[in-house]
Amino acid sequence: MPHTHYLIDVLVLLGAALVAVPLFQRLRLGGVLGYLVAGLVVGPHALALIEEVDAARALAELGVVFLLFAIGLELTWDRLKAIGLRTYGLGLAQIGVSAVAIFALARLFGLSNPAALIVGGGLALSSTAIVIQVLGERAQTKTIFGRTVIAILLLQDLAVGPLLILLEVLGRDGGAGLWTALGLAALKAAAAVTVILLIGKYLLTPALRVVAGARSPELFAAAALFIALGTSWVTEQAGLSMAFGAFLAGMVLGETEFHPQIEADIAPFRGILLGLFFMTVGMTIDLGAAADNILLVLGLTVGLLALKGVILFALGRLFRQSLWRSLRLAGMLSQGGEFAFVLFGIAMAVGVLPDASGQPLLVAVALTMAVTPLYVTFGLRFITFLESREAASQSDLERVAGALSGHAIIIGFGEVGRIVARLQRAHGQPYVVLDMSPRRVMEGRAAGEPAFYGDATMASVLHAAGAEQARALLIATAHPPTARRIVETARQHYPHLILLARGGDEITTRELRQEGVREVVCETTESALRLSGALTEVVNEPQPEPSRSIS
Image 1 (cartoon, rainbow, N blue to C red):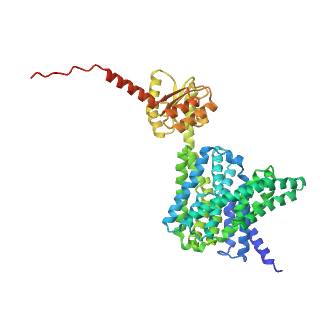
Image 2 (image 1 turned 180 degrees about the vertical axis):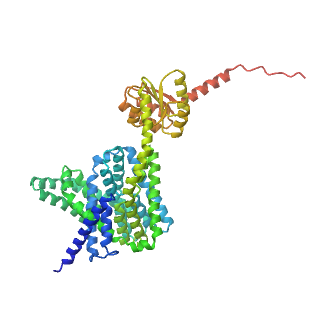
């Protein structure tokens, strides 16, 4: 039969997946890596069991289409609005800082501006497939940490479309005129989004209502597939990528009332085609070329994990995440993602990224993805052990605060906080102190103060400090954004508390008063009043008679 070899190729791919994926899942390394390894083994750079590599690449492109379509479906406006401003800031900062840092390093190692830009953008993103799977396996998708991670991944997914457009422009222009390419990418993205959103609102949604009226599940599934693939074809004809069209189609359909049914209908296609996509990615990895550059591959792997890990940890602390949550973020999101395979594969095909650089990068990304499940298995266990010691400290806080009633909670144990605590002790008033500096907490405890480590912007920490039975909360921190978040938490969860705060300037003082703080001491105003009074006294003092010398 003339097409028997195609059937053999399909059987080889399915058979390899049936062997590798369960094995990797049993080893708790994840199904994605199983697909990658299966494709690598049967691909042209290993056993060479696949004869038609071009056909496999066509399947890979279809897999990318459904990957982006599924991502678009998940990015509804409601989900985007549910992301808090602080998490928005953290996610955007992570993408921007990581991309700029990697771009600078790529330029330092000799890549052109276009190639470095694609490498920076691609490696700044993490593996949605692996991270979501790991969170699900650990039942953490609905925890505070899980929601933070998912929000950052959603923001990373938003960068997929612009990067695809940028790559299309760079590839067509041969890498010339980078800033012109960036401007064209932004204009084309805006135009494409506008046109497809209008088509979705005025054509696709009414058409789906007509199809749904036929009450045929098969017809509805076919309509969803037609819209996804048809939009992809239209964007390809317009000079954009099919994947970007699928991404926009997913966003449009995600806003309709048919979103749950569409997601259920494409789930089987998404699973199978994503598996084939990862396998074809594995087929593109040339281990022989990587072995010739083993030190480079290992350096890229360790360097990427370290660089993104440090950036994530630092940004987590900057955006007021706890120490342990920042460490978890650093380990969970420091790997490269599946989109890097898509981006680098296209970049190598159009000549933006040299194969000599692209192949080691692909292997390094795969290795970073392999490390993530290992980190979750062993690294998180160690972090949990360390965190349990802090939890014991919080238990001490609950024990101490539980014996108090009508006490004050002092937030911040800097110079102001220490003076306030000393005066409270002198007047025999009960209090507990919270601070985010382990050093200040240790110094306070050594001096006999009831000082504890805790983030007062969290309601659970205020609860441990006995906020239910406390009378007042004094904010002695000198950081206005933190003070405002503490006020917000206290007003929302413990409205009975009398709030007092330290205001650094008149603007902060006015804002805190507007937010419900009863007493705010403006340091600049108080200093000015005291200095003015002292100056008046000095000026009004009687001057001594000048002494006269008798010659």
